[in-house]
Image 1 (cartoon, one colour):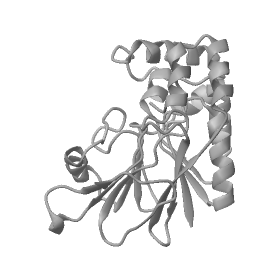
Image 2 (cartoon, one colour; image 1 turned 45 degrees about the vertical axis):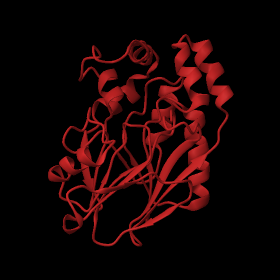
Image 3 (tube, helix red, strand yellow; image 1 turned 90 degrees about the vertical axis):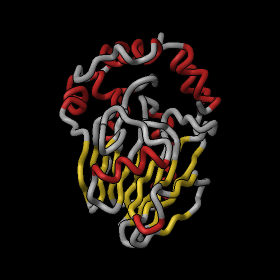
Length: 246
């Protein structure tokens, strides 16, 4: 059994379609969506509709989803993000907005913990280093934890007997990680707005039977999305950053 793991689509349905095509060729049985379906990109309603159609979907709420739903203040968002939230609210259909409203911020599924930011703070916290990762192992009990939010793929592997802090790795495209008894935090990177200086859409495939993890990168028509953003009235920087991967 394989799970397609996606995160931070951010209204970029062109990138999402490219990811789904690539994932279909690999094969998957279920989908873990780690939040931030909307924000920044020009087609939030289309993104939510497409994700809702995916087989075996487990989906959690990200900070942008929470902001659009009115659950959190956007005062701490930067100016571009605030403008994007207001724009999304005006361009979302009622049914898809209701879907976002009812998303949980953390779920346990198939022996894994699924959340957006971290188990300790599902909406806001970034896990970018071994120290923060280590603190979060106290907040989930499963062997595997899937997170997004940082827009950067990363793997944390932890055995208590090996030392104080978990080992961390930046996966390359197609690299296979095999696990045994260690506890692992996995981030698939971002579908719609990567921030690791690689503009290709990023997603993960987790094999529940073999306990393997692979991050894949796929190209998509960035110029098309940039033009859509420019024509939509969204902040210009939302378009510029796509081709730079930041």
